[in-house]
Length: 387
Image (cartoon, rainbow, N blue to C red; front, side, top):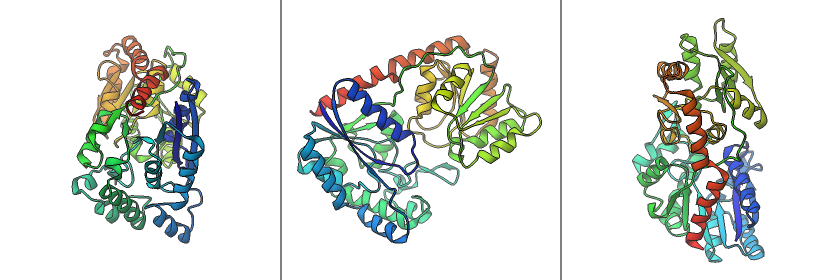
């Protein structure tokens, strides 16, 4: 099969970019002919560039030409679109329509219902735009990059192309990561639910660990939506029953560093670490802590933990409860609840949940749902529906 991967890369490389790379490589390794067409937003800086970009966010003639040229040169069976904001624009869907090519789009976030893509504002989950049926709340709060102008441009573009039938008629299948995401798309009424398929992210297999390090582990960006404050509060109150190592960097790094330096703190800040170091930390860790307070898409750290047989304690929010099976591969606590996090950690530390059974179940869930082999089967099933 000939597959054209189209993706607008982010200014700061993140999990979505990693998923695109991993998925593309997986397809190549299975013998498919894959072409990558990447766009980026690196040249959008300065007032004039931002004003011009706001216009192109509706439709980019230059990007449409690049897509058409790629289609004419490569002749794909499938075009798989990931992110289209902002340089690529919805012009990609007009270009593919003109060449009568089947289109799959992965919704890694909630962009079609929320200009910021994350449904998170002022320290809490936010669903104002889907409930209002428009993007005026996002414009009022400047949700897209802190800009009312940018929020109006992006929200207006999504709404306009919805009126023109792009989301309903010019995408053949949508891939979302969880059942929770299906419900959010259904609430928004822009995406036909009969076109939605669920396919989670995956990671390559790795040799499982045995724990034994005597510590819990957090891996990820140190930022408010990730629930770092919940960890800091639990530690400050002396509620943590075992050391909690923190691997990552971000805007709250200094707060974590100061907290870890407090006498009696159970926190150990490791800072930025490589993927190989993350795997080694996970192999020795007893449990992964995921205290997010926003609607995560599908954290890659979950699939990675399961591949290594590492159980997870997570917030009961968004799609996390369907990824972490309570009492089977981990435990849940209320988002933002420091005491609840500590209770879940105490139950795990005391062996109430059966640590060996949790590790075995985590590894088995990886093999059943989040391995490369299973992911390839799911992706090809979606492609074959429309080819």
